[in-house]
View (tube, rainbow, N blue to C red):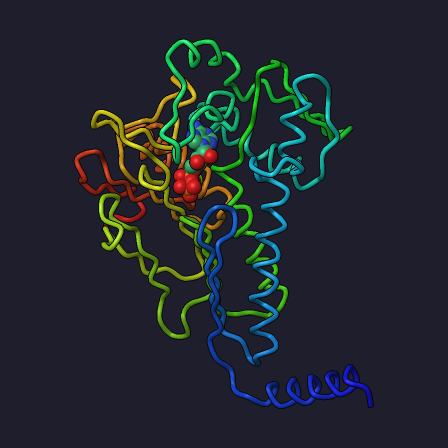
Length: 324
Ligand code: ADP
Ligand code: MG
């Protein structure tokens, strides 16, 4: 027998042995999409557990390659390079996510708008860089989701203003979490958690107990502002602490108003609880931009969604569905 055959035989023996082991929790974390990914599943066997963890990490990496603005060959980068000049044929997955993004823009009266990037790409939070007033003013006309022309029949996207750029940073992680949860469900996982940065979704409970999902204190990494017991649900948090720099005592952070091209300051943190991570992700960004009154008002009108908001004075506010 050569070494390969011996290895295969050993692998089969290990698999057979491990299949007889009892069920337990399996977890793993990794840095993908510029954020921390964490997966935890209850699996019947080590093989099922390992396969579940592997599949989620692979899905995260796949979406990163498709949607990262930092990868020149990503589908997003290709769209940004070409759609200002001509319609670009895109994947079904990208088409659907762009379509959702545009619908959420309409729902949030433009507070969520992936064309924020027409100005937003000039901010570099790691290098304390921001565009000057004149540059912002010259690019603001390109920030408008109505410039995104989606042709359902041809599966193309075109920008009707040549300076438009899009960025999916406010929705792609939620989409990745939703896809990951679907993968786990198809594998028969009955209890699980997937987190990508501030976006978390759960399958079932933590075997007899709810999952406890924390909302961190925006000004203290070590502290939780609130913890939410959840099951079979999802929660996304947007905060002014994820990416920012300070200059003359002012915080320039990564959530920008499409109206001004600048950071907004009415709230420090917004968490949205609802069934879909894709929507939670985008709505948390939208409510952050809309501010406490308008943002909470909107969430109170959307069935199945709730919000926890910390305002600029660090006072907590809850949507109607969370108050009794
Ligand atoms: P994170 O989980 O990365 O903190 P959020 O869900 O809070 O992300 O979304 C912030 C990201 O969304 C920003 O880093 C940027 O990529 C994008 N973004 C910023 N402002 C807007 C906006 N007004 N509309 C849509 N996307 C935005
Ligand atoms: Mg978000």
